[in-house]
Length: 375
Image (cartoon, rainbow, N blue to C red; front, side, top):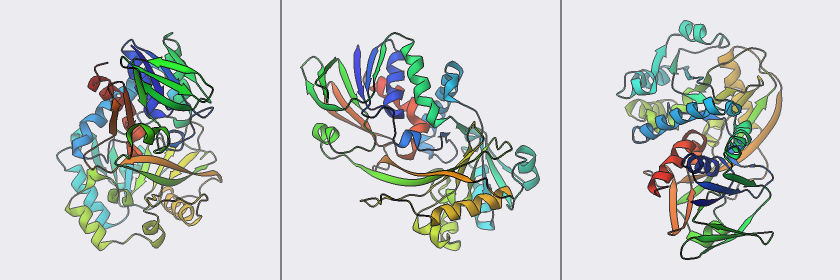
């Protein structure tokens, strides 16, 4: 079977990888010279710890697939880093204790560590905290390296072609398949077309399937110069309990009721996530904005908040900030949907809306789509 996949981000690339793995031929189109959206503007985290119980099985499957991919494609930078959610108040500690004793704790690899145990595991953490919730199943990849590495791997099959700087303008049903027309007047014939256009909900996506039950979310992040010492685990703060459904329960309700976020954190719907890149710098974020139109600039106050929290947990000053950026991703507004799949006809599908889970769930979503469409 011949597939044309529109969109060069992690979702489109994961679907290409699943199709190549099943012996099909794939042509992938990306309108930019290289994917520039949420896929390269994230932490590269494969995040098991905060996923809700209904999505845990698929998340663990994706974690397994990422590890297998990392073994075949070292350039993606996979590492089973684990994570530490560091708690600083009794209310946050109550959430961590409940998570460590919960029914899915073993699946997630949860263990509640005392401060000295945290420091034994992660000597770079010399700051102030009451405990750390360790999740051994969390992992990381290098978000800016992963896609080129995966494309090079797929090209080795002889059944994969990538067209950069190519914008798909129309997709037409031919009865037995479909034809994609691009902005250079070329035609790509396919048995199946998958449109994985990320946060581009208008244009071709709207032409094919109209309005979808999705929204766009904007976040701010930053990158430091090399830390000068290893920080092998990803770290999060107690505010992350408020935003991840895997921690929902009476302890989180009490946290929200009894412990207010700072004004800046509440305004920007913030949590701390931090992961060290292979070059030694730290990627730190993030914020959440849901109301469009999004501003074209970034605010400084969230960065000041994130810097202060990270320095408190590390017990040291951060290295200089070398870059800041914003990103926008697509999120399904159906609470029961991990991704939105919409059929334009038997041979044309739109797949979007994994939210901030795109990097985590990409391989499993690609596999799931392949199963659903009998590839």
